[in-house]
Image 1 (tube, rainbow, N blue to C red):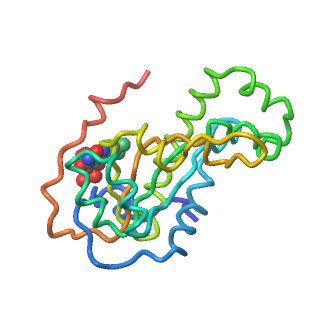
Image 2: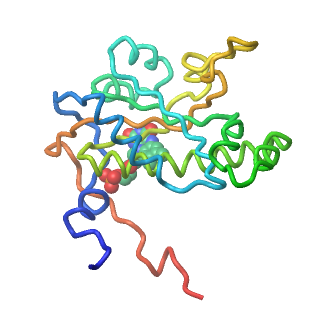
Length: 206
Ligand SMILES: Cc1cc2nc3c(=O)[nH]c(=O)nc-3n(C[C@H](O)[C@H](O)[C@H](O)COP(=O)(O)O)c2cc1C
């Protein structure tokens, strides 16, 4: 059997998938959000470090907390989206490595003892997982509207405030990367798709 996605699936996740700004009045069940995570988590990360963390904002009250951090052009569409995901990463991701990378118990130390490597690794792999998130969401029929037009520091202060001591919350170690609106987009409002670079412009074969 040929192990390859059919055209319909490739269209769904790539060729016909668009970035959406206008949302139909159709809710997104929590179960679908769980399905998205349970797909995206299988995407590869270095040393299986899995640093991405996702905060799903589903209620008007939660969205209102996000509003002051949004750039003006992202405000209205985000307030109207059924769900906004804050794609974040855990700065202390390495504490999970003894469980996630069990065959090398030294792995935690690579990062715990090197803050710069930990940050680069968290951001790189957290961003990759953000891309897996978009593909996973499209795979279960959701539309996405990713956004970087917001104030990360404001989001972090609002949703991931510092806490310390024995009762410190894990979220206090999270940092926002980008946002992604989720729902069912109104395709009638899309503008014509912008081109992409051709293979010969973006790739080299050596
Ligand atoms: C990481 C990221 C950040 C983005 N930030 C914004 C944003 O702040 N505001 C916005 O309107 N669109 C934003 N976009 C949407 C892009 O402009 C859009 O995905 C791109 O033009 C491709 O559009 P298409 O998927 O319809 O082909 C962002 C997309 C990505 C992946």
